[in-house]
Length: 164
Image (cartoon, rainbow, N blue to C red; front, side):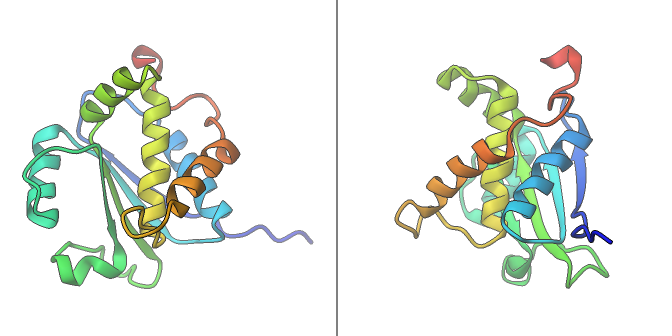
């Protein structure tokens, strides 16, 4: 009998005008966790600029919007960040993405919004797993690049048809 590793749980919240396919978001995060031999629950939230600026100011001390914030589960007590009840052992943390900022970055870099969101999901997920591009010597960026190639595009695309 073939045993498959447990599928990570990905909870997606979208409070923006952008329409992301939840199953595609879960597929990207699931592939990242599998590649890193990690398992657990990850919450992904897509929020508008005002909400992200408020979170960034409250938890990171920068009162401005940004493309991605990560809140690893172990940091929750220090940052006064809420964690879901009953998931203490399985919860890896939250990845918060601002699609409006991501869209500006995608335009500047001349890439598709879906590609930028995929990069931010991987980037944020790596932070949940303990990577830190500020403190390392390029290891996180190198791993991010390798994972983006390994993970590939989600089946069916990341954005719903009207936003592609």
